[in-house]
Image (tube, rainbow, N blue to C red):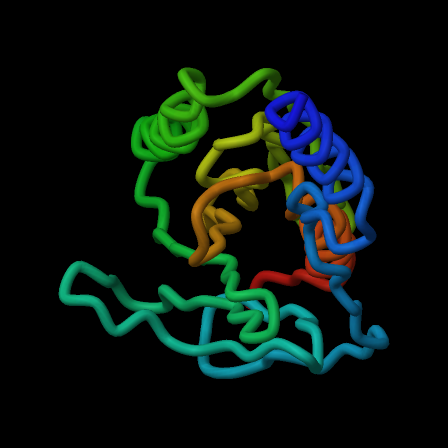
Length: 192
């Protein structure tokens, strides 16, 4: 009888402990506060100009492999950056190769992507044409990539990266927020 009492006591204790308010909750993502939108004009001695967010900064790419006019729009609060790489265009053959390179960078995400959506960018009054790629997938390293060109002399490729382990489900609000900044970038972009 004593054994049964001890067994019932421990079983009851186990049931009471499991319903305690101190039971660990499943992991969740932190709420990310988005800053107020404001923009500044980037008009340096580059072959292009654009507006960028005041809560971000534009810094030159200092890697050994960087070429002239390569830079990053850095989002310190989000641990992200939009890498911008510029190439002058010498011929239509070279432009075709740059288009192919941009597509190759996007298609490298296929193993981790669940979808890749393309969107044409056209501002004929400013001679700005391009493509915006939305790369969906929880572990895609770069959820947004794009290129812009005037179809004759200039080519600019951009890619959004985060310096965190890829989990685009939890980063979705930040990705959507930065996508609006990228669209504003397009709206204000001009070749010099």
